[in-house]
Image 1 (cartoon, helix red, strand yellow):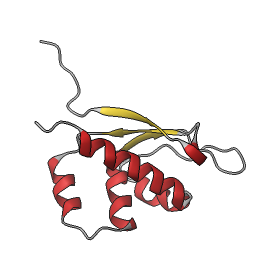
Image 2 (tube, one colour):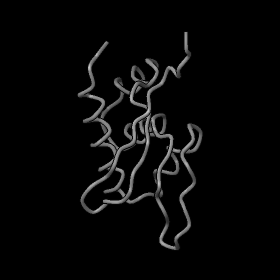
Image 3 (cartoon, one colour):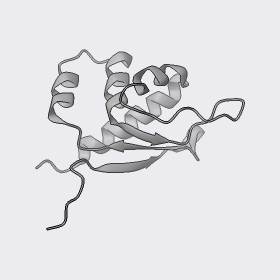
Length: 105
């Protein structure tokens, strides 16, 4: 039997003002992450924490053309603080809308 990774990743293409940018995120996060997140009050800190656990890749660049560091579970929540708020909001909406629509096991 072939082994495959437990966690599923999906590439998300942003639109509108952020067309051309994309990110990849885990769409079936560990249960503990979901339980921790679902008990928090909605807001930017909670969303930053959730995205911090989910994001695995992105193609974002700074004004000087230097790429933002690739996301890691240890650094992404803090790196998100350096991104434009409307970009993070677009990412969060796309991500949450997508995972909410996925079939439940």
